[in-house]
Image 1 (tube, protein in one colour):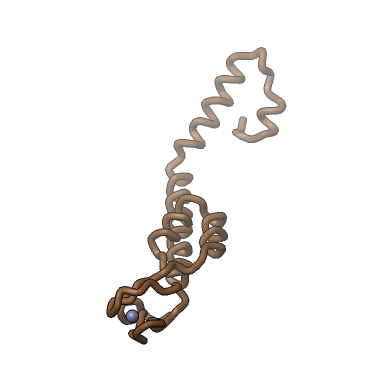
Image 2 (cartoon, rainbow, N blue to C red):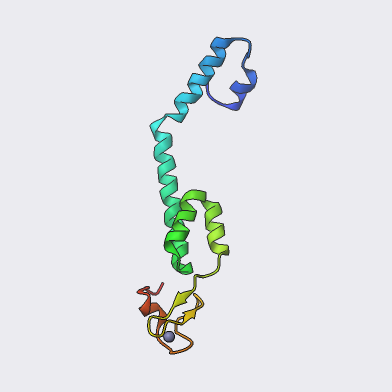
Length: 118
Ligand SMILES: [Zn+2]
């Protein structure tokens, strides 16, 4: 007996041995180490892609967490969120995240925040 929907539909619910066997089969699938390896690999991969999106949104940690927790849905949320605001290191003026230079003093915002150009 395998743990799938056809086994669940065809099971004789009046037979406790059959129900117990199916339950044991499905429980063993959950504790299969390969399932957890794939789950961890998928989570790390989603976090990396989320962090990559975050480099463009200037919120790497936020978008990596969104990617790790929500997967592709987190990527879509990251893409919909606005670019994070930044602060000029020279004069302290807050600027939109897309700006490369301070609108008040002209100081480079990318160098001030230690960000590399993509
Ligand atoms: Zn400035």
